[in-house]
Length: 335
Image (tube, rainbow, N blue to C red; front, top):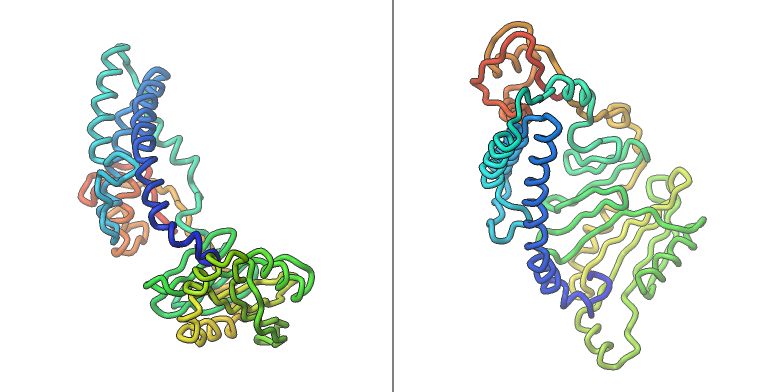
């Protein structure tokens, strides 16, 4: 949408239409999965009422989220509270139908299997801290503009100004040289370079390119593109046998307003050398055994869980802080 303005004008409408189109399929599929999940698990001897408890956990997690909840009629999934009630009813019906007895939960066996599981995002694949993006595995860092939103994925790291008028994206570029990387990127996005300079960024060889979207051949499209032209500033930076493309994108009319922000971020790309950041490890789920009967909150304190994470751990365990946990009970904490 950013580099093809003739398509961008349809983007919002298309996304909304597609979302609404698939709502029914998402909800129907989820309801069917709940129904079949209860049936299959009950038939092979598991207590499906614990499947219902998971939807209560989802509901509690949603209530803790800072984001406003999605209205039921626009959600691609049925409401967790509704699914909790439905699954409980389904479980009771199936247990009665097949006259199930001695249904299993196997909670302890399951918890032992997930002991050590990575919790949340793995910082080894990149993380943001104090408005700086660090990548311990690839050994680089650069700042994120204050107030900008960001999102990390295996393919790219994106930053966007909240009003949506500018964005930056870091990706790996193709080619064996800076010139080849620039040429391939410009061709991929159909950009016409207007300026190109070799520079050094904190000791790393780099190529800086300013480019605009190419004018369309059709006169009508050409006129349309002139009103919504895109301009980019890209730093191609060579580091540890990789070439990184750090591209800033905005409408041509806004480019001067964001040029300094783009440049400031790109010129602060540097090698990551701080051992504490290079060695940052992921949080992991750790399964602990309660030594003596106590409240869940006290059990967390005994395992040195900070008070500020008590609610989070209660949700993670499907418990309430005031619940009594007996000696020998296994609980999940995060370390």
